[in-house]
Amino acid sequence: MSALLQVENLSKSYGYEPLFTDISFGLDEGDKVGLIAKNGTGKSTLLNLLAGVESPDNGTIIYRNNLRIGYLPQSPEFESAKTVLEVCLEGNDAASVAVRAYERSLANGDASAMTSAIQAMDNSHAWDYEARFKQILSQLKIDDFHQPVGELSGGQVKRVALAKILIDEPQFLILDEPTNHLDIDMIEWLENYLKRSTMTLLMVTHDRYFLDNICSKIMELDHQQIYTYDGSYNYYLEKRAERIEAQNVQVERARNLLRTELEWMRRQPQARQHKAQYRIDAFYDLQERARGYRDRGDVRLNVNSAYIGKKIFTAHQVSKAFGDKVILKDFEYTFARYEKLGIVGDNGVGKSTFIKLLLGEVPCDSGNFEIGKTVRFGYYSQEGMSLDESKTVIEAVRDIAEYIYFDEKTQYTAAQFLNLFLFNNSEQQKYIANLSGGEKRRLYLAMVLMSKPNFLILDEPTNDLDISTLEILEDYLSKFNGCVIIVSHDRFFMDRTVDHTFVFMGDGVVKDFPGNYSEYRAWKDYHDRLDAEAARATAKPKDKVKYNVRDKSNKLTFKERKEFEALTTEIELLTAEKQQLDTLFASGEVITDMDTKSAHYSELQQLLEEKEMRWLELSEKE
Image (cartoon, rainbow, N blue to C red):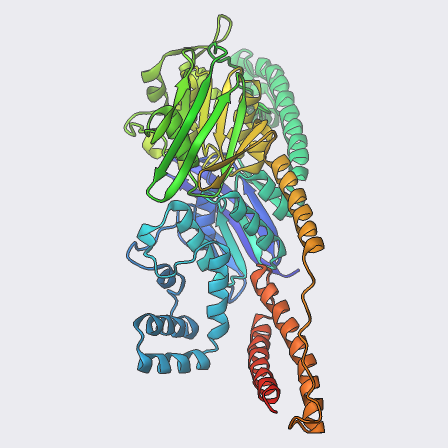
């Protein structure tokens, strides 16, 4: 494979804080690489450097000549007044300009402008381009091309940004948390699209199924250095464990040697001049190695919840709607003690509204939730909490409590508790204003758990959290002696943490499934197949269109009769071929020869129209 990108001795710091120092790596054409690191260590910064959004302090980034790069930032922003169409066609290339003019003339109904626009579309071969961007937008469930971006939800804006990049067909695609704010159907569509694509890919994501199913190489940014693993995410986990074990052994060995050397160096100063210089130099080198980072392995948060009684909550005939949009309709449910419930569904079906109804933040239209007296909610919301950014991390936690008590045997100081959430002593002194988005979410999570809740409600907890923090949270939830409701699009996280699933189907319908998301998906796929097979088996075979050959009394000549019979067969074959292309265009597959197939599709349509007109002409002869 040919080299596509080479990074040499790249360094970047903010103030006195280095993110990474002298890192080097390369990417080959066709590589699909996942970048993993703890929040705040420079993942997004590295992607910004590669995309040309920021400049490095030192080092070089060398791209192959004329490389087309597509970059999806974590939080894409567009001018709110622009429409979806205008955002996707912002380029000044001939095809984009032609499609913009064509769509404008369609909207205005200007016949003269339409004639000019059609000519421009023909000249720039833009018909295929228009079909491609409309196809991608439709597959990403964006149907109103003229809707202003300012009216879209966060998830819709993310999908428009994604569509804009995919439409341009980059050779190198850089994605920063592409699954954030996407529902599960969209995540699975994107996963399949990227798996089939031949584009070179570098992405940051916390979605471990997404990572494992797409990437063939993992790069880890750890303590300002890059480590590369040629294999899937599962392979990376195995090899990383081996690296950490070897690293810890080396550090421990250096510390043991240091004790011996320290005694030697501390002998009477007057004897120092007789010491071998090489041994003195070796001592200082050893001292640096002994100070090396010793990985603690998997951090475990062993805390207990407050006591919770047998009565949790009961939903009595709860209904809620916003205008014509029905969220719940006569919903009834009795929540069990220690139940761990996951909630899934498309964006906008009311998952977060359900949580707010339960917490009393939004009133029910009818019915009510009856909450048990011992229930103590801990709520982690999508919006997060308001943090005083003029304070340090440790100050913010100490404002809530200096000591965190979980039971008679388990208590932590504020600093110890923050250590469990991967805030070391130096990071605890950081001002909140200087934290990354993921670090702020991690701090927010720590502050929610500080309150010792017995009923945790987590609304999209995986957005902006790194994999290390998710592993801590997953372990905590597996041992949590209370109730849990989780709203999430992260399939791996849901499979690890819940044993029961609500599927919001829309129009107030909630399906109660006794298993995690993957079990529900397997069940749904199985029953969808059964339903499809049953439908095929019971469907009446379509009557073949019978074309009566005219008898001798009609005016068809022998030659015309033969032509009429041949047309029937030709029309059937052309229709079948056109349907195959329709299916291909709607499948979402990467079509390498899109121009050829689109041109052939246009020829098929024209030929089919001509033959159908001739068939009608002959059929009407008497």
